[in-house]
Length: 450
Image: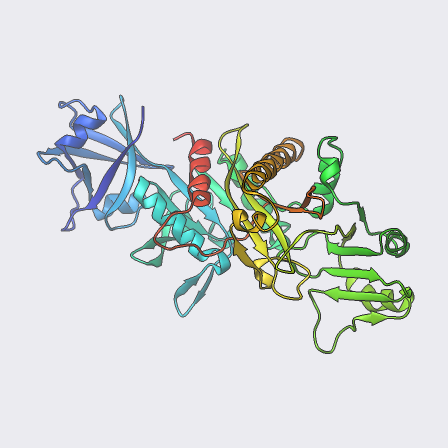
């Protein structure tokens, strides 16, 4: 039976009696027989039993005592939740969606980092739809209840919540995703049959291996190799004269090198990690260049990738971010698409490195006709869907969101630059809920089967 959004209201005065009140209109909408005098109310794994009193009011509401709210692990103020009535006199409240991330508190203020505005967007949308939404960290989890935070009247408040019907993983630290604490939480969710996504970070090399083994996607991938010895860098420079060296676990455009071999045999280096006292830009020999970058390369895994001569916008690097979301177990859709234009003299277009967001129509219109722009955007969208369908099919774990970065070379050929399992969230218009936020919640509801 389809769930109905209702208003959960606390009694104004504390009551120790096991009574709950329900409006007559809500009784009719839920299909509860008039002769029902007691009710079992369930929220997550928690249940209370109470005598049921019908109130002759048109408003859709259920009034509960502070004690009942406490036993159900619900906030003690007015909230909207969906409700389903079962014939055994049970009222099921929900759904419950939780987002797992890193949480800091400074001067009793909750800080969720770069995704805080996005979390508030999710919370506002859930409140509108009658969904209980909260955020929690690894330290707040237990098998019986979760200590997390809910968004109410423009602020975050701590509370003890029921276990959710579904969890969206937004842990941003790869180190934490490898920790025993994280693995214990995930193991517990699996044991309790609570679905969660996105399963984990994917590194650049495993993404490349999956996509390059797919015949119809291989032509869109730059030549890339897992860096295992320094001769690979020199060999590719001798072939291409220009390459990128990227960390396989990198994000936000960090720790990237670009190396060019000049016509006179010297080597030019650009990097997203330069500091005033660090590396110089010009080297007379490959040995000198490698000696400068090797201390960084030995700390983690890197790939060596040919540099594609990409089209620029106003002399700056540009790529196209397609945000793709899963609708059900098979179907993917593009929920948003933007062009990202780099800051001046930057080798990457990431917003975290000073890049700016433009409309794809505006950027493509710089070098294509209106008809060609429309056709190209459609092609890029279709390529994005092919990429995420391939990854979700061939990689273990549940994934509901990917950010696909594409670019065009001087001939107009598309290239797959990068795929992100936890794409960054720029701050949008606070008065609107973006399609990407709605898509996350809709997929949560699909997984929750509520």
